[in-house]
Each structure stands twice: as C-alpha cells, then as structure tokens.
Image (cartoon, one colour):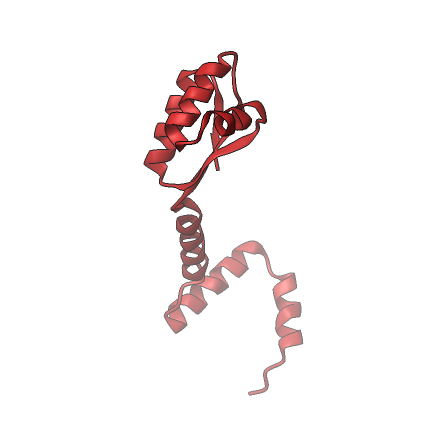
Length: 122
C-alpha cells in the first residue's frame, strides 16, 4: 500500500471538525495512544517549575515618611552600619537582602512595611 501524505492532507483539509475528532478517537483506539497526554504532561511540568522558587531578593521601593525608623529596621535586618543602612534607605529602590528563603523574605517585608516602607519580593 502506497502512502501519499499529500492526498491525506488534502482529505483532512476538506473534513469537518466532527470527522476529524472521530478520526483522532479512532487512531487513539487503534494504536492505544492518547493525543492529549503529551500536552497535559508538558503543561503540568512547566507549571511546577515556574511555581517553585528557592530564594528571594527583598527590595525596598519606597522608604516611606519615617526614614529614621526605616534605617533602624534596615540596620537590624542586615547588620549594616548607620551610613550603609542610610544609603540603602535614601537611594531606593535598593535590595535590602538577597537570596533569602521565602519565610525570611516575608519576615523582612513585614518589618519594613511596619515602619512605612514599600517592599517587593523578587
């Protein structure tokens, strides 16, 4: 039996959606495969990879009105001296801490937001 892909493609172009759906089901039954499985597996794997993040950077985007409190909070969080902490607060946006766990990042965010700063996690 000769296999002519051009003839098959031409036939598929003329077929209705219902006919094509029936054809897919027949091929799945005949060969014991599923047309949907590879697509679903790829989508699930991509979703898991995107959702899992190990480390976060805490960035202060606005220091707020209480800069002195923000400086104190930054010193407490980072262990920096007064001059360095003031530099971070005065020159926002600035990364306060890099590569921290999600829990630590959220704790830092809460401390900074408590003194009026605006913080994002990246």
